[in-house]
Length: 106
Length: 205
Image (cartoon, rainbow over all chains, first blue to last red):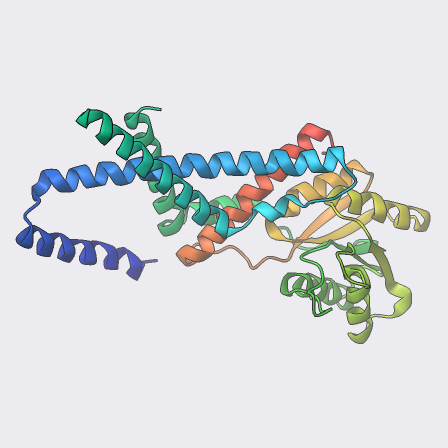
């Protein structure tokens, strides 16, 4: 089925690119750099998501094995974990970039 | 970790996200994983725990839907017994007891209802149900379970000695779902994959 969302994104992106390019003129190279940075951010955030899930499963199983408490594994089935992992990834990404910029300046 | 690796990983994650949201790939995966067999006559209908009881004391939406599915199967005559499962949570009444009251109000005779409360996992449910049904000589059961969990639940119940026929109550998977529905299904399938791996490692299936 055709999704309207698929039409919205390219149209909104194209309009924004044209307008910004006219005003500030970052050029094609700037856009390519931005895409690469976003891919890096997505990679870091996904790694955090996988790590958080693995840690969560380990903690739930440890609680079940080492105590009389019962914690359901389904507590991890929460959309907020995706958002929190993205935030973790964003902070780590900015920190990495800042460190790289500083060392380039030194 | 190198930037190249992170970019590649990020690109793979974004491609997976787009494929999962905007193509029928996840729907097709759901169709493959969730059994779609017609119901068969059995000796008991077993409704597994599904979401428990809300703080208001009422059944959650998913629990209510599963209970209604079991009640419908009972009224259609698929089996003479209705086993209602569901653990305690933090309330006075268990999910199973709350379901039983709903079933009685829906016209199921009290003598046909078996309450299997206090179990917290699918395996505990299987052991509890076996303890209740074995003395009655019940072997073949119709298992009312949420779609993605059907295969694992069937394996667990068969491991403890039942012949289990699935009756998944999830909305049927279609190839024209919305992106959000597809992502929800993907999440359920992923959680179920983790649970199945755990059950396999523990030797429960």
